[in-house]
Image (tube, rainbow, N blue to C red; front, top):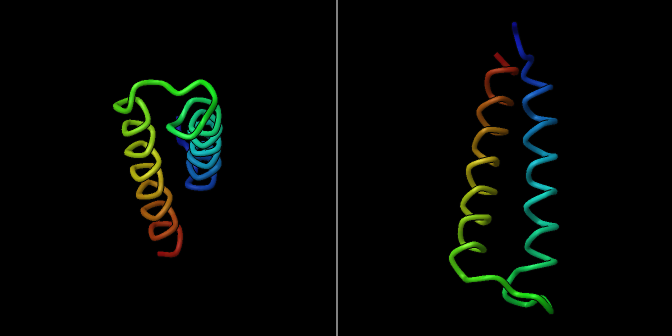
Length: 62
């Protein structure tokens, strides 16, 4: 099974949207905040997803 760079980017963008929604609903500034470590984990995940997207874009350009 081969997964295209475009499919990985689409998946990563969808994951980022989920993380941002979670932060809006449960982050430090929400009405129902969760422990700070959970928000930190989501922000780390977003940064990692940004790197995945950058790597896929770089490889697709080659």
